[in-house]
Length: 303
Image 1 (cartoon, one colour):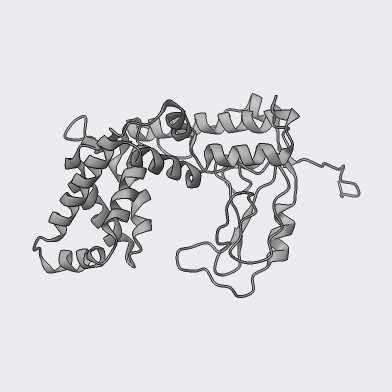
Image 2: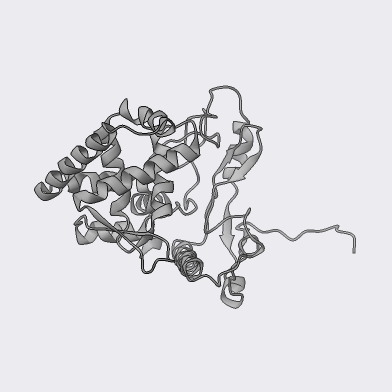
């Protein structure tokens, strides 16, 4: 069915289906339309304000002073949207790690510590639960925010965007994306964006190379972790990652098995492929699973 769609239409569908940029807005809309959630959100704002008005030791005061000048509703909205993704229990550290970069702290450690405290404070508003299976287990967060069935499906599908299934947009400036529905900086690293010269011609050339999955390899070779999975949490995390990978392999094949990986540069100009489950700069398995879509026989190679 998907092959009867134009590649551009399939690409837009993938972006709306998988990108958190869209799903975040869907979640915000449903929370705003739910009177019960608005009452709990108001309670969360009160709890956060009360906590910030307290008196603490100096280093904590220094951290909280960065929050006291911010829009508290923006902070609460950010926490609630990210917590809504925890439809199944998710590690507390994972949730705070996703929220912290959005606060604009200069020090990442301070951002994570302060975020963890705010998530714990707002928990009293009954928007999510923080639990642990035993005293030795890690903390887990599970959402209590009601979402529509369709949005729950979107949430479960949300992930790092798969490769593009249509030719990427040609890049002409640094604040642009090869994707069809959103823009982003082409320079990796927080605070590194600038409007100076970068090798846009090289990025465009690399983006325009059509690739495909090596179906024979993927059917015959199983992907294995490159780290110790004896810990239960790490094992479960690996199995989720592996399952998502095979779901995306299947999707790419169904959509024609011809795709494009986008690229960005770091502040030194080094090029990095923007792929997660499908990439040419990952493990040996990931590299072996990707081929050129337009293949040629190499001649004249010395034996």
